[in-house]
Length: 226
Image (cartoon, rainbow, N blue to C red; front, side, top):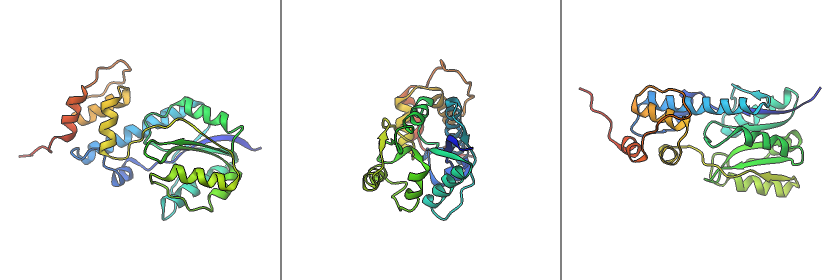
């Protein structure tokens, strides 16, 4: 029997993530890895909260990001799902509500896009028939023109799409500093603690380090070890 929808969590391990990204130029490799781990854990928690079946820890095979993504999606469809919702680990504004809304919108649309404010995407919801055609197309993945390129492909191929609200993502140290300066959440608190080498306690009402202090911490020179 065909299953309806699953969320595919498409993410590298923390070790591979920091090989591709630097979340803080002045933090240690260990701190950067802990930040990557915090983002991954937060994304998995949101996915579980949605109540939608999910696929975690999919082996990434292929020479390029595009090949790895397409093969991961194909394995999801091979498991019997009719629709796949793909999300990564770098969009701290993603909520369970976005995922539930995507599932609902896929009842009436071939593709649901979650555009990132930098021109990429943070979410792709897609039916198997649309994916079959999409997987034959070379798109500018991991670029700031991706959302527009997918929209044009949708128009050229006669599919019906719908867009969610735009969200920020975290690709580098600048994005992280912006997130910490503008948001007050358990995730920002966790990252603050990583940067300050302090103990983290899960508490929605926890105190937060003031943004000016964080900017100093993020931009200060590395310590000199004797």
